[in-house]
Structures are given as structure tokens and as C-alpha cells.
Length: 170
Image (cartoon, rainbow, N blue to C red):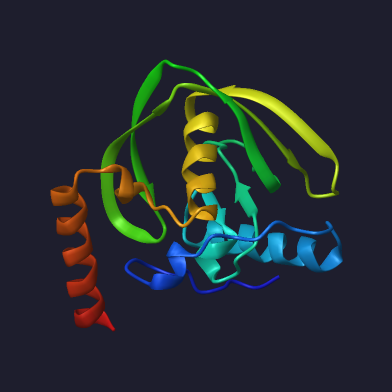
């Protein structure tokens, strides 16, 4: 396993639409292991493959609390099959937009399906943090960042701060 560099906005690779995965094999599992280690090291609760420069439809996530056992989850080719009309707002952050947080409105409940670490199909109805985090990470697969859900003014302010920080810290 290896910790990989995380791309940060405004890196244009983050706007790439990720490609579906053909098969869940040892090579893909090694990628997911690297992603999980990278996410834990950051630290974060979710990571899409494109955030480490790999344009594949793969997400890792762990929503366990600080005092809980790790509960890693793996999502290969995830799809949202249904969303509720009811919306909820969560303060979101992102490893690709470090130290920036804003409230984002998303459907409160979703149904989703994907393949797990071993290539087995999974289907769930989710709400709360799982629904929010899955929608956030799936946005990455379409080249969308959480800041793209904000007003142009808020997004531009955040991107200016990111660009300034990159120039200052390399």
C-alpha cells in the first residue's frame, strides 16, 4: 500500500469524467487499498480515484467515528438509482479543497448500487452522512466539486484562496 498525492483545486484533472471499471481484480483492489491509506493519512472520510489522478469510477469511504473501529467501504461503478424530493443541508469539506467548508443542499435520501471490494453487487437505501458523502464522492466521478454547488461568488472566493495558497506554499 502507498500514500498517493491528492490533487487540489483548481487542478484541471479534477474536472475529468471518470471511466467505468471493467473488472474488479487484484490491480483494482491494490488501487483501492492505496486510496484508503491515502484517505486515512489526509485525514478524510471519503476519496474518489480521480482525486489521486486515476480517472476510474472508484470511491473509498469510512464514516466511523474517532473512537470506533474502522469501517472501510469500497464503491466500484456506483450509481444513484433514486433520490428523495426532500433535501438536507450539510457542511461539506473536501480533500481536494483543503480547509474550505460550506453548506451544500443535496437529496436527503438516495438509493444506490455498486460493486464492492470483491466485485459483488450491493444495493442500499441511504440517508444522513452516508447519503451525503456518497453523493459528494460520486460528484467527483463526474468532474464536479462540492464548491460547484455554491454560488459563483462563494466558489470564486474559494478558488482565489486556493490559487493564492498554492503560489505561497508551492
